[in-house]
Amino acid sequence: MNPLSGAGAGAGAGAPAGSPYDPNDPNIKRLNAMMESCFGKAALSGVMGFGMGGLFGMFMASMSYDTPFHTPGAPGSAPQSITSLPLRQQLKIGFKDMGSRSYSTAKNFGLVGLMFSGIECGIEGYRAKNDMFNGTAAGCLTGGILARSGGPTAVAGGCAAFAAFSAAIDAWLRQPKDED
Image (cartoon, one colour):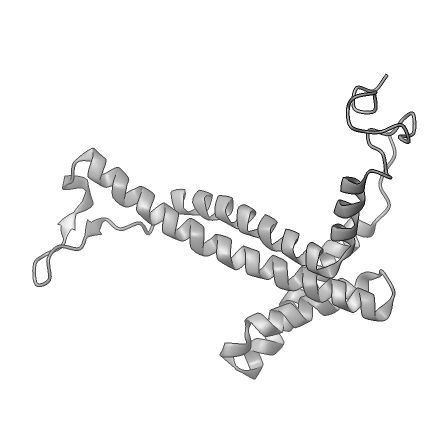
């Protein structure tokens, strides 16, 4: 017997024998409704993008070779070599740099996830189709919006790059899986 569908587990009497949860449970219905809404999908993608961006930023900051080898001194004085500082001060500077880079990357990934998911869901709802065009168009719009401050050439390049990447990922995810 599945421990999640047993009596007293909160699953209720209506749970199918092989199912770990009851689809009639109001909490499950609320979660499903949230995940079917564009707002819910976009919010979840933004939060997950923020988390992934934070981890990615932390990793990239730890692998960075352009870390400051000198710490700025008082105005007008020569900068001090970071290797001449005590270990605790070196770690403080390193972790502060890692935190700021991680937060910056997290914000960017969160914004891209939020925008792409929201735009894709809106296009899918408008067209009433679930195909590769939705992701490709959402990629083009997201790339163009993110590059808007660089002028028309940057908008076209951002649109093309995001659309190509979205199409490639969508094609890979939609290919038939091998059954071993």
